[in-house]
Image (cartoon, rainbow over all chains, first blue to last red; front, side, top):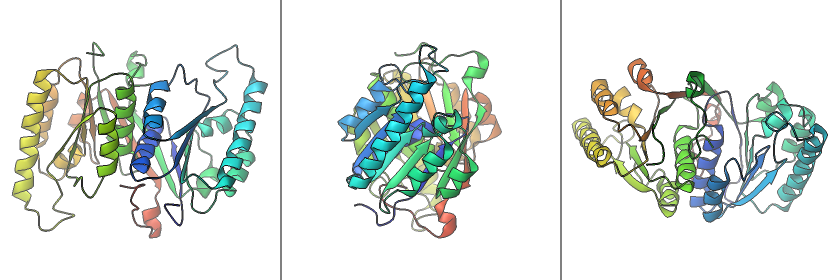
Length: 177
Length: 177
C-alpha cells in the first residue's frame, strides 16, 4: 500500500476536465508505482475513450468498463439493463476493494449513474463507506450530490466558462473523446 | 495534422485538476496518434511530476520543462533569472510552433508565469496569436486573465469545493505531485 490513508476525490461540474483529470491522476499514480484500477460507467470503450484507456493499460493500469452505454445516447439500450449493470459493477468493485490489491480506484462517470437514477444514492454511499483505509478513491461525473460530497476529502467543480459546443463545434476524436 | 482547426483550451482556478487534465488530454491525444509536445513552467521535474512526465514520454510525448522553479517556493531562485527563462521558453516554443510538427502543445502553469509577472500578459497574447491554425493549444494555471480567456475556445475553471489542505493534510507524492 502506497499511502496509509487514501483520500476520496470528486470531480464534478459541467466543464471539461473530469475524465481527463482522472486519467492524469492515474498516469501520475502509475508513475509512482501505485497499483491503479481505472473503471468507467456508461462509456462504450470502442466509441469513447478506447485509445486513452489503451494508454493507461500500457502504463500498467487495470481497466474495466461497466454499464457500457447510456440510454440517453443510445435509445436501443434498456434502462433496466443499465441499472442492473451499474449494480453489478458496484458489487464487483466491492469485491475488488475487499481484496486490497489496488492503491487507487477510479470510477469515471459513476456520479452520472446516480444522477440519472441507475443507482440509488444510498448504494453509492454504502459503497464508499466500504473503502479500505489505504485506498485512494476517485469519482467523476456531473451532479455530485451533497451527501456524496460530504464523504469526500477533495471536491473540484469543473466549471464551464467557455465551451466550443456552445458555438456549434461538435466533439472531436482525440480531444473530446 | 490531425485537426483542420485546433482549439485553445484554458484550465484555471484554485481547485485540483488543472495539470492532471492536461496530462489526461495528452494521453488521449497520443492514443489517437497526435504528436504531442508537453511543456511545463516553474516545475522542477526532479521534484514535481517527474514520474507522470516519464509516463507521457513512454507514450510518445516530447516533454520540455522551462523556468525550472518558482521563487515563491524556492527563495534561492532569482526572479530576473526566472523571467528570462520564461521568455526564452516562449521564444523556443514559437520556433517549435512554426515548425508545424506537433498537433498538440500543452503549456502547463504558463498562466502562473503571467499571474506572477514573469511574463507580461501581452507576450503570452502575442504568442497565442502565432498559433498555427491546426495546433491544439492547452494552457493551465491559476489566474487566467480576461484577455487570455477572450482568445480561448475552451475555458474551465477548476473550482475548489473541498480540499484536504484546508484540513491540514499536506501534499503526497503520487497523488498531488
